[in-house]
Image (cartoon, rainbow, N blue to C red; front, side, top):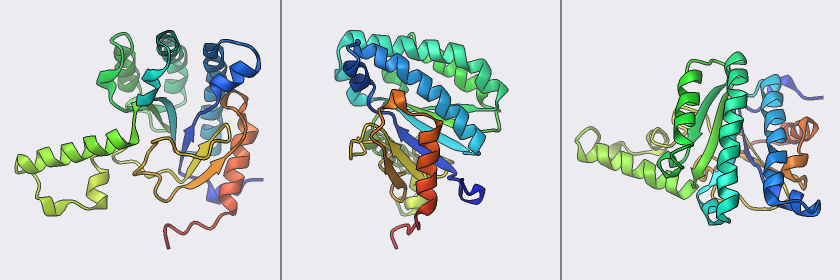
Amino acid sequence: MLDREIIPLHIAVIMDGNGRWAKKRGLPRVMGHRAGMKSVREVIKSCRELGIRYLTLYAFSSENWKRPKEEVETLMRFLNEYIDKELPSFIKNGIKLNFIGRMDGLPDFVRPRLKKATEETKDCGGMTLNVALNYSGRSEIIDAAKKFASQVKAGKRDIEDLDEGSFGGFLYTAGQPDPDLLIRTSGEMRISNFLLWQISYAELYVTPKLWPDFRKSDLISAVAEYQKRERRFGA
């Protein structure tokens, strides 16, 4: 049983293993991505039921453009399909959508849907769902530094104003708490350039489950493990 008094405020997930899931079954990689969408739906629903206020999903990294063109195009079509299908449910359940990453690098046929979804859920007061697209943790830090530098150049800020708190206000996740728990599927022991600033003190949980096999019971196991730990925040 979970202790409802120690539920993470913010969970981040590296959704890994779609390709390996498909390969094990002799299927095209894109079928692994489609199967993974079921896990996305289940995890979002489960986090909402558990009272998680912020959920960040690593959907597409800036390095993923190196994959075969056909696979990338299919992923982008899946993204559009997912938003079209799930947006009414997000609105009904008070889920606010926030897309993080370099949006200008996404295809023209994707960006309007992201904008529409963001606009239509902006007043939702339940869980905030961050979806990382064309995302790189290093690029996020660079973009934040440029924003701060531009304000200094414009005379709106002094260089001495820069500290950890103020810098966080220039990140894609500005105004949100840092993740308490980072979950990675597929058993890989790395963070893959994800939320490099924000996960400084997050608890890490790695499961061998491939993403399409990840279910509510696996999420509960991750939260249960989190609740056993003593968070030290570097102390």
